[in-house]
Image 1 (cartoon, rainbow, N blue to C red):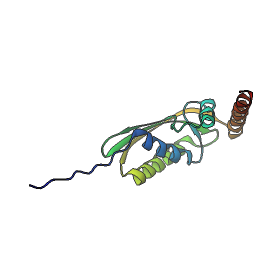
Image 2: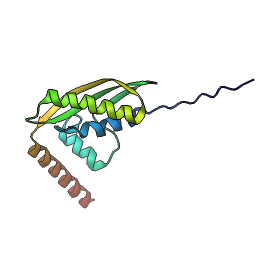
Image 3: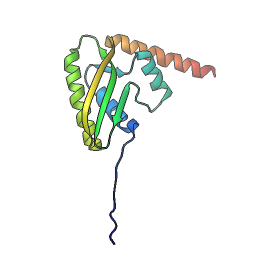
Image 4: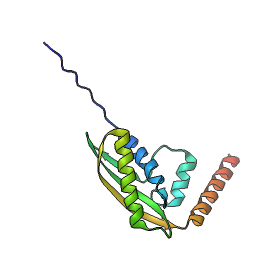
Length: 134
């Protein structure tokens, strides 16, 4: 009697979400993922590993990805969306072998780069002050 070995490779959704998050943040014109800049900066300060604003539904061979993003004001959003789909699909497929069947992009906010940087600086400053008082 022969024994058939069955080997499997699976990915937790958070792994695919992290890959997609890194990919989307590499696209010019994307300032952050998730609903609002204040939350994004807060998450960066608290050093959570979660890819906020990125959700993946992972199957055995396919994956669908939903993204909530903040876009830089003055950039062409349809071009950004096209580049996001291309980059996320490529990076997820290259890293996992999964076929990306869907990339849904939801623009949650739009900000000038200068304003986004001010929000980041203020949030980091507030966090530093909070930790100094403890």
